[in-house]
Image (cartoon, rainbow, N blue to C red):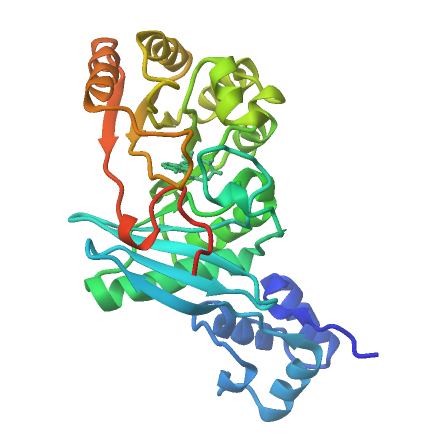
Length: 346
Ligand code: SAH
């Protein structure tokens, strides 16, 4: 029976050094190979030209390099790029490059599909197939960085975990990927330029606070009233708003990092004064700001973007209560690359 070879990028630098010592070589060889894997992005052992043929063969016999492949790249008329990324087991995830005048943001996936069941999100219709490995998350970022340099003449500046999946349900791998992204041996990006977006899993928000993570936190709130939130995000029945609120207070107390609430206003669902007032109350528990995001239809009659009057009401009531609010227009809608539209259509 053929033994399934392990992905060499699952090894830490120390483990790689130890592997070479175990095989009668120098620990330093581990550093060289590590550099090929992470800084130079080698896709095969043959690329490692300063490593002897014999050593390359030995690596080949023991390991594989499970690199992602960008299967299809779509470019929107607004400059947004969407990658369909093929994983080593032929599953597909999507990632997006969002350019603005001052920054280029990568929106990356953390899981294949999603186990949550938000009624307005296209990804929720794909059942969760598996978690992404740290290197699969890292590779998405590298691919977008390359595209940013190629098509926009500048490196990637920001990363948001707002692609497919719930990052806090794949917490360890997301953390490892961020470690690599922020490390000098990876991309050397500042954690302040990374946002992890969660549907709000209280236990994991507390864990992040305990781990003293340095990246920013966004929470997909969409309603501050339990009955409403449970209708559109059914897992809210398990993690009600009070638990979420307490976890967020804990987060702020530990990290002093203000929280961003992502919020879509839908007609007939959360567009009344009562809904705004509940949001204002929720925002008082920890320093926060609100991003009102545009709804991207996913062929479901249940949801319709609220009219401009309702959005204006949200903005004026929030501002009157000294809560920072921004109204965000969606990008890349023509290629199904906007929030909530990632569903491997192609
Ligand atoms: N699971 C994480 C990461 C996904 S982020 C989370 O829930 O935060 C994607 C963001 O887009 C979330 O804020 C989500 O609530 C929002 N979203 C989902 N479907 C959408 C849609 N159809 N239109 C606009 N935003 C949507």
